[in-house]
Image (cartoon, rainbow, N blue to C red):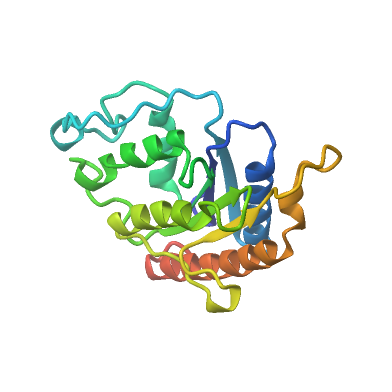
Length: 219
């Protein structure tokens, strides 16, 4: 990722390769790119080893710029990228009325950005966007968004409420309600969600650009 552009990092926790969550995240990142001056990167947690935080407090006393957490797994390079981005987009499927387990583990591991010796409150002021895809409109979408939203709040990140989009804590899309073997990417037919995510990403980029200007990273 460059030093002068707005850096957007999207992370999907769906175990399905190129499924509805991945395509919804792609759509969001494309909306960000359309605003100009944006570089995006996507990370899939599919097949990765992401252990949960063990609350060892190693990060509080021994954290270095090169090693954010004591647990040596696939979360380490992801955490580094999270620390470098300007906009963090977390996209989780709905599982049992809540976010997926691997996304919860990654969120827990971000504790190293709160209490870390080198990265204390390092995510403060960054932009956080929550996305989710569920089978039903009222089957856990809001609970999943709330979990991600509150994680952003704990980090003192900026969230992106957009009244016009009907999105106050993130954007949820519906992929199901009927089984269609010919069209498994039904999230791309949820026009309300697609419109909402366009508006949310437009505002997210505008907010990030203001942050960058304030930090004299772009003029």
